[in-house]
Structure formats: C-alpha cells, structure tokens
Image 1 (spheres, rainbow, N blue to C red):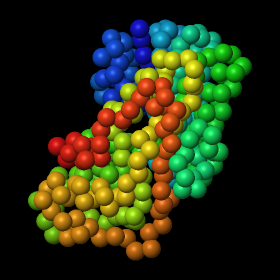
Image 2: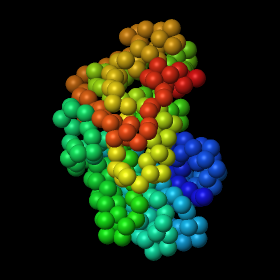
Image 3: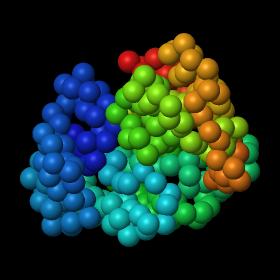
Length: 290
C-alpha cells in the first residue's frame, strides 16, 4: 500500500503521515520546501504525472496550499489548489485510475450565515482562497462523475497543533505565552476576541480523512467538532496555564473587522462514518504550550 502526499511538510501532512505509518502504508511525500521529503511543485503537470505513473499509489492526498484568504496569495493558491487538483486528477485518470484521491476543502468556501455549516450549505466565493477551493471541488466532482474516479473532499474547520505557523492567531497566542518571561513589557495585539470558531486538533482531523477515504458511500463531508469557542476563551486557557491574567498582556485592535462572527460545522455525516474528535480545547491548549 502506498500513499502520495502533496504538502507533507504542513501540519496535516505530518499527522497524516503518522496515520499512514500506523496503518503500514508506504509514504511518498512531496513539498515545495526543502526537508526530508521530495521537493517538487504540484502545479507542475509533468512532475505530478511522473510520480503517479511511477508509483501507482493507492492513495493521493492533496494538502498543498498557502493557508490564507488574503488577496496577495491569489496566484499562488490558484496554482497549488486549482491547477494542482487538475494535475493530480488527470494523472490518476491516465495512469492509476484505482487510486483514491483526497482533496482538502475549507470551511471558508461556504456561505456563512452564522448557522452550522454542512454539506448542503451553498458555496460562496468570498476570497481568492475560496475561489480556488470551489474550483478544486468542482473538478473533483467532474472526474468522479465522468470517469468514475474515487475522489473525496473533506471540508476542514479550524484545526491546530504545535506545528501550526504563527501567522494563525491560535499559535500566535500560544507562542506568546510560552515565551512570556522573555516578552516582559511587551503586549500581544490581536483583533476581535469575541469571534467564535472551532478549536480542533489536526491529528484528530486527519483521522477523519483516513476514515473517509477508506469507505465508498460518502465522498464529501465537513470535518469539525461542531463546537465553537471565542478567541477570548483560548486566551483565558493559554494564559491560565502560565498562571497569568490575559488582560494584563493583550491589546485588542480598535475597529478590527473579523471575516466572520462565528464559523462552526454540523459534523453529523462524518460522525455517522465513525469519527469522533478526541482532543478537547483544554487538551489542545496544553499540547500547544508544551
């Protein structure tokens, strides 16, 4: 059994590689950045085609992306997500049609009215990132319906781990607390602390991915806990672990406009497949501060 993982140096790729090892699956890892894995770009068709033709993987996982909704990543995410998806699907169609393909989706590609989001919630092209994700899903549906490929999509809600980059607010807060004695006199400036989102553990999320791609009944599902917390709750947990009061260290940006007030899933479908998140927000905070 072989799994080809694009974007293996990200947190999702790391935890999925651990899941593959547990299941005795050989890993072929690809990343744009240098590391212990093969260096390459999923937007290069000849590169992707050669890999899939050579290895005939049982699984192909597409995690490659710049995890931001900002406009500056417009072309980068179009290449990684949209073009990368087409490269993978066409290569699988031509050379390895029995491969099971997983495409990462995002909570950010749905219309968000504040209600729990599920698989029937309409898409909304609210950012360059969501545009790329939506195009990727429609490509997956086309190859599934037209050519019979087993193409899966998991729509990830917020998930973190010690491997998360500091451009994400949860890790930014955790790192500030970890270095609080060095940060004496400094303030942590953040946006709207009333914003509500999920606090899932990336290791739990990829367990859902593994369950999804190893069944043949459901091909698209949201992946989240269905539990939303305020960023203020995360502040309290992280600073309490250091026996500090977050109000003494945090400055809230005035007139900050968040992308949403609440972003939460309805995970009924993925739970019906047999998945349950194992890591609480309290456990996640301890893990990221460890």
